[in-house]
Image 1 (tube, each protein chain N blue to C red):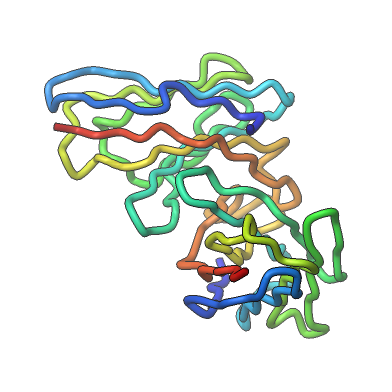
Image 2 (cartoon, rainbow over the protein chains, first blue to last red; image 1 turned 45 degrees about the vertical axis):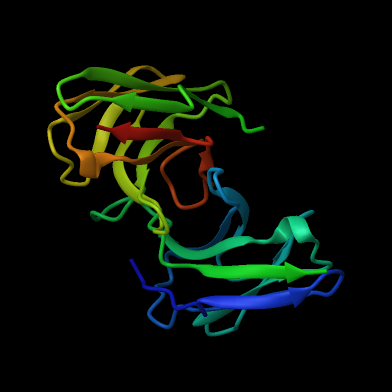
Length: 115
Length: 114
């Protein structure tokens, strides 16, 4: 699987947009970009995923660059409850190969939302 | 609340004990997963089941024995564990194992081996 690089930590003021970057320069054409977050003492929570196009749901927006080598997760109006570890993951889309089916977590970004 | 239910929430066991962790989902998902998470580390994949068959074993020691009795249930049988096996054990499910099927996680079982 392609590796991802994320900043170890970020801060954001409550009510402002949180923009979390992720580099995945070795991503293949058959790999999705996934974002999860994990709030202390809970299981990881799915946020959003995409292949090539930008995606938006009720939680966040995912912006993928045209060359697919990086992406940004946007939380439009951060709240204190968004404080968590955010994981950017690339995941093989198609069958075949030993990586199929795996979702492999990296170190993630600790996002702290301040009042 | 999550749609993947894990029991028990906490478990303390001795090194000679045998115990089981249970995971249940009723979303009709056909893929189920076990992850292990040590403190301040990311989750690490242990096993993947697809259509009730084991499809991935990430070289996990045999003292961990997974079982998928039906499409809704996933067990992890534990025997002769070591203190370093103390961790949060997470179960997840997805519609399929393909890359377009997000995993949904439970809140885990926190295991302490004494």
